[in-house]
Image (cartoon, rainbow, N blue to C red; front, side):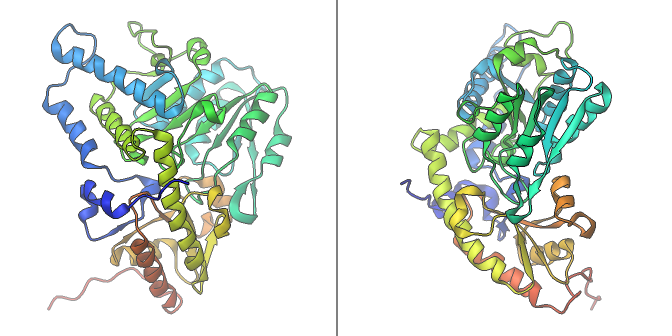
Length: 418
């Protein structure tokens, strides 16, 4: 059994956490530790250059790129030559989806899910429109807002080319059975295509262990800078057609999908973020994630015990404290009589930072009947969050729920001048 982390010992390493606020906006982007900030600044401070030159700073950049590929390969259970970098996950996914579509025939099928962030849905809708492909949608199970894998299995046939799914919902926190889904995809002769963006801060996004062919994630969700990472099975990266300028290198294979000059400073920050994660497990990434998971499960139980018990609060997602292994510490809820935006504003006034709306999980919000009502409120915990912040969230939501119906929906008014 992994020993839980001590967030109070970690928090001083994150400068932003010195602010008097509960940062529960982690599903939309995490805070960065000082080592990541310094790595980004250090690359620029010490002299940056594009790669391909014979002078010192260019050679430093080449070494940095190689180090970044090795670090991301280790994190994702891949080989360095299977790693591609991009501006963000969404941009990479649009590009890779076009590569798949060019290798497909009209009438071929893509399966997406109603649990996903739209970054793993919209690219497939676009290429389907452009190339005459068919997109099928795997639905949710109403109980717990989990993916209906049995229904997904029923959508597969010999024309299925890709099964695109999330490893964890960025809205309700539900974790999918990736190995089962990947097995179903492979049995149908299709690719298993995983969005690991929300998963990566909470569980190791190990492509090989999960059995998926393409895995995408973003360091800014696991305490690093804004960057996109794709881990692409080598034989696929070698054979797909890539949009690239003519002089661009064909090697490593995944590099073919990197258009233009990348953010070298973001690569430096990503290396530092992965090293920082590794340090949580005394050099072992799996051990680090076990410690993160143990701490987050403690927080999850506390939230599930208390938040849904507040009169007027409806929680969407797996509600049972005994099922903490099946979800991340991400909580989607509404408060009767108040709009999600009004609840988020009221919580912000108490120093509790949460999101409201659909968080780009459009199909999920539509499936739950929430999109037409402004979505929902989302509070998410990371390894640097504390039990005191659970208390702070619950107290703030209790305040909002106790207001007369409609009071929290009123826009805040500025005080009249004295």
